[in-house]
Structures are given as C-alpha cells and as structure tokens.
Amino acid sequence: MGAPAKGQSGTSSLGVGLIGLGWMGRLHSEAHVRTRHHYPDSDLVPRLVIAADSAPDRRREALALGYGAVTQHWEEVVSHPQVHAVSVTAPNWLHRDIAVAAARAGKHIWIEKPVGRDLRETSEIASAVAGAGVRSRVGFDLRYAPTIQRARTLVQEGVLGEIRHARATFLSDYASDPQAPRTWRFVREQAGSGALGDLMVHIVDLLAYLVAPIDAVCATAATAIAARPAEGQPDVMLPVENEDFVSSLVRFANGAQGVMEASRVATGRQSYAAVEIHGTLGALAWSFDRMNELQLSVGRLSSGDRGATRVMADTSHGTFAAFQPGPGLLLGYDDLKVMQAHDFARSIALDAQSAPGMDEAVRAARTLAAMERSWVSGGWEGTEQEGKTRSEYGKRPVSSESATRSDQAEAPDVGDEERET
Ligand SMILES: NC(=O)c1ccc[n+]([C@@H]2O[C@H](COP(=O)([O-])OP(=O)(O)OC[C@H]3O[C@@H](n4cnc5c(N)ncnc54)[C@H](O)[C@@H]3O)[C@@H](O)[C@H]2O)c1
Image (cartoon, rainbow, N blue to C red; front, side):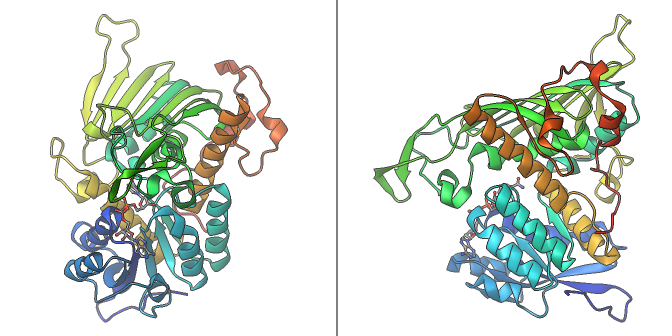
C-alpha cells in the first residue's frame, strides 16, 4: 500500500498524484502545498509527484504548479511508485475507473463530488476503497467552513433545542444563459445527473452533517433549457440530458422536516449555498457568500429583542486558527480545500478514516438516488441507508413528538473523530 517512508527529520513525504488539472485540479494542487504552511506540525508533507491531463496546456500548467512530471495517461499516475495519494479531479465520467484503479493500486484518494455518476458507481468506489484499506476524502467543502463547524456544535449541544425543521438551497446561474454551450455537465453519460449531483449533493451532505441523517424525500425536477449549442459549433443545437433544477421535501431520522432546492439556472444567484435550522429554543442561518458569519438567534423568544446576532468565525471554530489570529479576518473558498488536504494527510498519517470519506459519499448518493426515484414516482421515497429496511421508511406522521429514542440512537455518524475502517 502507499505508505510514505519517514525521512531524517521525522516527517514523511506524501507523494501526490493528480488527474484532471482544471478548476478543482488547481485548487487541490495548491491545497496540498499550502498544508505545510498552515499546519507546520503535520507528520506528512505533501510532494507533487505527477499530474495527468488530456490537454497539453493543462500539463504545462501542472509543471508550473510544481509537479515533477506530467502525462496524458492517468494510468501512469495511479501506478507511479512514488505516488501515495491521488487527487481525482477529472470530469465525473472518469471517477469510477480512476478511483477503483487507484484504490486497488494501494493509493489513498481525495475525490471530488459527486464521486460516482450514480449510486452504483459511488458504491463501487466505496467497495474498492474498503477492500484496499486505503483512506478517502470527498470534496464536501461546505462542512469545512469554521462557522459551520460552530453551527454543528451548537446543534449537538442542544443550544437550539430540539430541531424542528431545516432548509438548504444551492442556487447558481452558471447555466441560465441558453447560449452557454453544452459542456460535459449537460450530458448524462458524462456527468450523470445535473443540478442534483453537481449542487444538491453539497447541501445533502451539509444537512446530514448539521441535523441528522436524511430518511426520506419527496422531490421534483425540471430541465428549463432543453437544448444548447454544441461546444465550438454555435449553430448546432444538442439536447440537455439532465435536470437544471431540483427541489425536495425532506424527513430526517430525528423527526425534523426540511426543504431543499438546487438550481443551475437560478438567474441572479451565483454559488449561493445557504442553510437555516430552526429549533425549539433558537435558530441559525448561514450562507456561503458570507461564510465567515453565522446568524444566531437564541434566548430571545419572549424578549422584545427578537432577531439574530452576527457571530464571526473565530479561532475556536474548526481550524480557523491555522489561518488567521482572530475574528473579522476572513477566510476564502480555497482555505476550505487546504483544511480538506490537511484532514486527508492526517488520516493517512494516523491510518484512521475520518469524515467526510466514502461512507458520507455513499450516504449522500443514496439520498440523491431517492430524489431521482421520487421525481419519477411522484411520491415519498426512503433513502434506504445501510442497515435500514424499506419498511422502516413508512409514511409515519412526523411531528417532533414522533421522533423515537431509536431514531436518535442512529443519528449522525458524521463526526470529525477518526474511525478505523
Ligand atoms: N467541490 C466542489 O465544489 C466542486 C466544484 C467544481 C467541480 N467539482 C468537481 O470536480 C471535478 C472536475 O470539475 P472541474 O470544474 O475542475 O472541471 P474542469 O473541466 O475545469 O477540469 C477537468 C479537467 O480534466 C481534464 N481531463 C478531461 N479528460 C481527461 C482525461 N481522460 N485524463 C486526464 N484529464 C482529463 C480536462 O482537460 C480538464 O483540465 C468534477 O467531478 C466536478 O463535479 C467540485
């Protein structure tokens, strides 16, 4: 297996390979390198060994980023003897083959969402990872925001009381222009689902992380723009093969209810991921475009001062302190990737899996699959999480009183604690 060897300094070098040097590939590369600046006590120091991309200009860029070698064949990354860990940042249709091959070659994997194109592929990757005993990390970025880490603590400590309902949205307008070309994201064979796997997956993970596992969903979906110009051929129109918009009602395992919505044609919104949670004692609200802030409302029910307090990200929230010395100093999206890279390296150094890895990816994929079934059936669908039978997702009334003790006992294995696999 890809076990890094210790050097004279006591730290080890983690040989990194990367496949797909687009937006995410660049972010992963920089994040690997930045871990040594933000987490200087790390036992593992990433070293960029080799990157693969099918495009020559991207390979040149990889050399400029510091990779020792480049190739157009991803198989060379997976089989490279100095590579211990592989960043899988290629388009979706390549994820399964790359991730399964990497795991079988004993490489740890940091893979971008949605992981597989569907539940079957995600499960295949999870099996390969489990079978090889390698560590995994999944690009569920939102849960890394220090204010989200704080939100989770507040929920878990009961500061909001019993959670009654929650909602999350991920709205983007990257596909609002009907003249935007039909890239791989609009082709089912290449992307899998549309807004579901691209955007909804993030907030499915976020609500499972903050509230409780999602038990059942009732979803609807639509493709707003049915055809788009072919790439490089503006006069040739081709069909859009997956959905632009998904919305869903949600029932959580702890009895809470929720609403979720994801759109890539939400004109006027850009990467607007947001969550609100309401409990018997208080509420919180957060959005990605102000990710250093948490709107918190507690202890005000009977006062004349209702409303939310703005809580700023602070050194006691997550690993904020690895980046800034105090509140009001703002983190950005790239920093969340550095945190992921660090967690990934740490789980390899400790040989202990931590979340979010393949367990969380499969859990999210089960929820997405239930949403797809639901928008076809037109009714509620259970998420069929591991260990539950279909009959356990019956259409019971979901008042907060109906949450049973056994529901609560099954609640979140979504912690930050390391776990052995
Ligand atoms: N975590 C997030 O929020 C987030 C955001 C964006 C994208 N993603 C995911 O990251 C992945 C990549 O998305 P992106 O936006 O970076 O895409 P991109 O199109 O910017 O980059 C993909 C790269 O892969 C390369 N590539 C294509 N075929 C290849 C092959 N056979 N071998 C090697 N390289 C190949 C392309 O040349 C390109 O450089 C997708 O799975 C996407 O869903 C995650």
